Length: 264
Ligand code: NAD
Image (cartoon, rainbow, N blue to C red; front, side):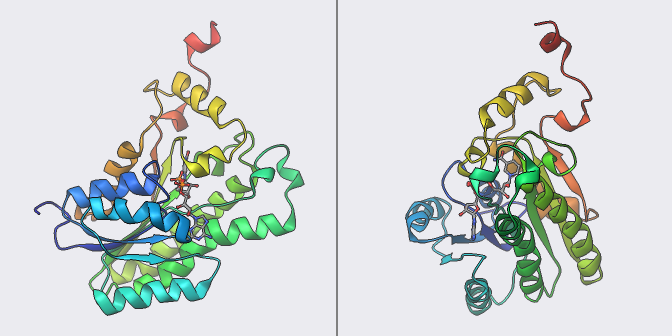
């Protein structure tokens, strides 16, 4: 296999099925020669992820629930034993109780606030710290965020707050690890139909609004995100760190709905 990722080995966290953003990223990376290790959350998802990993030539799969730090340590330990190093990680993990992804943000419970922050934000920091120890020759880290971090999106609620903290973490981690040649970035993806996306109330309306009002007049695909991830995880972006890169068909630059939407 030839390509710009040839000789690079990386950890992909967050494939649930072939609609997952992490799957779009995996395809782009493997297509350019990267060797991948996948984690899966629980055996039921493992059964779906195993054949997908196989499609990309990987038999390196490990269970991991980021709420259980021992399972994160086990993943890092297994990678150290098999590969001895890591070149990149992809963190595409998010969770919040779907009963709180509707109604008022103000009604978020303390338990769900904490759980959402730990899974969707702090897990990136915990994984980054461990992965950095395997990146002696430098490396790249990527996480996934959404524009509900900087602007209010109906029903996104506590996830928006967790994504804001995640984006701040990207900047702090980029500063921490920059002197070691490790770059840390995020992709802020537009809405895509996935398992996690379906947990947000009225997700369909969000997709349709974006499709009608983004400059490109469409939503984005997991392949759009995969291509941008390839840039951020490869040497093509060697001078880029601490960035929140939007892959949202340009929606974030708009300040009012498209004129054709208004005239309807
Ligand atoms: P997805 O459901 O395919 O992926 C979410 C992943 O998170 C799953 O693989 C799930 O197993 C994993 N996960 C959840 N809790 C976990 C835990 N405790 N331990 C380990 N893994 C856990 O959905 P997706 O849309 O591909 O989500 C990937 C990332 O992209 C998330 O961070 C999400 O917030 C972000 N994102 C999604 C959209 C969208 O519209 N779909 C837009 C922007 C950002």
